[in-house]
Length: 280
Image (cartoon, rainbow, N blue to C red; front, top):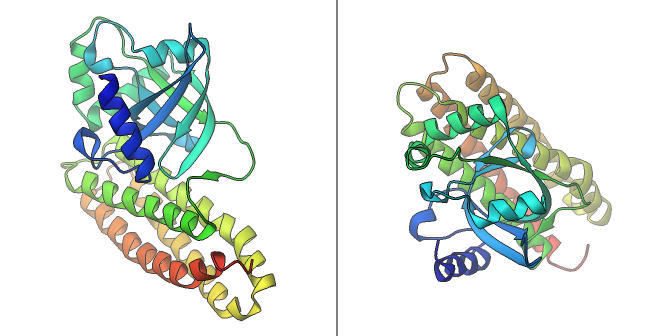
């Protein structure tokens, strides 16, 4: 894409917590910063991505079906360590080019979910590379927010956007549940599970020590985590069925969405004033 267009998308992405308009509106978008293969300078590119198993994400070096690989792909071949901005989080990652059947299965999932990938492949003789971005663990997450409370709200809003996107995908999926849509749902379930586990093990005990008056609210939120864990398990069970019915999956997602929204709203009302009050 033209440099000026990329710059506009990058600025909008960073200013709005990963939300942009135009051709990327309502989609999954990240910013990938690579190191120039020749220059050694950082280069940032907005890219659509696909959730994958084990928390990694996939990007496809389509260049809209151009005859040559995009520059960012050549860069990560030379320097596989990259920086990923995913709206809420910024993290270092290792770029791994998928090969053989693993690449083919991943691309088939992508093309089933969005035929545009097949259109790009048909335009060129090269095989469109699929690249996995695997996060490099580096301590506490780097959340793009101005305060602890804002960070909590940003994480919550990320879950809200993903739930809305999945609901839309299921509603338009047709008679079957596509492979990529299953991965999207499972990725969401894992993300929510990890978030709640982290709160139960870290944030809630810390707040309980400093704010004993929060004990009833913290206990309520912990119990809600347990209830949501049951709903997440129910959703994963439905998704994992070989002949999963999209309407049944949609009803489970909608049930989960209602409970998640109620929980997130209550948590924000109780915790953000405390987290941003300077008493922690």
